[in-house]
Length: 93
Image (spheres, rainbow, N blue to C red):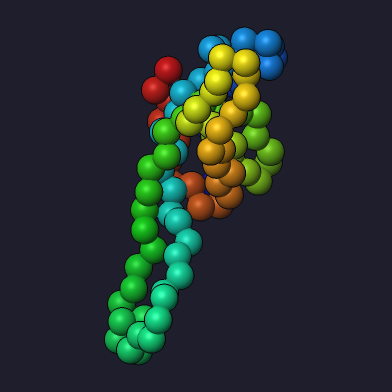
């Protein structure tokens, strides 16, 4: 599946206020902690999640998102989501 992502401005490092804000809906991997019956494992499903943040320059395989940007241009709690896990990307700004 080819994802259509908004363009990240060339000057994004100088002015991060111009970064697109997106909501990424994606299927997350999960683990099963502790002992589980075969039925519990057979019926377990992956979680579909939504992550909102500033879209950073991404690669051909990964979408990079930062939910928080400081006034000095540093990023906190960034996400790197494999594009193969992405269901939909919605542009919010």
